[in-house]
Length: 90
Image (cartoon, rainbow, N blue to C red; front, side):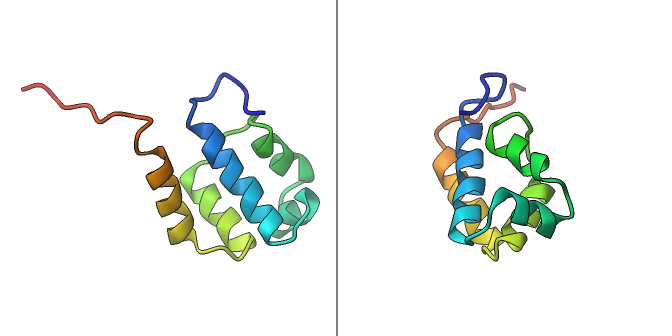
């Protein structure tokens, strides 16, 4: 479960990482090895204890042989209603 210290939408990022890893048939350890990291790096991401920035998300996509553009677009579409756009006041 994603820790409450993160935004509500972040759970969808975590779900995307988990889904990509499982779709690629990788264990957390195998994904971590492909990223040149330790298993707990992936474990902390998947439990919401560590946020993933955009560059790391792209690395994860590539390690899972997933199309980064498609994955980011899917997330943007899923998250579009979560954070309303704020207009700057003149």
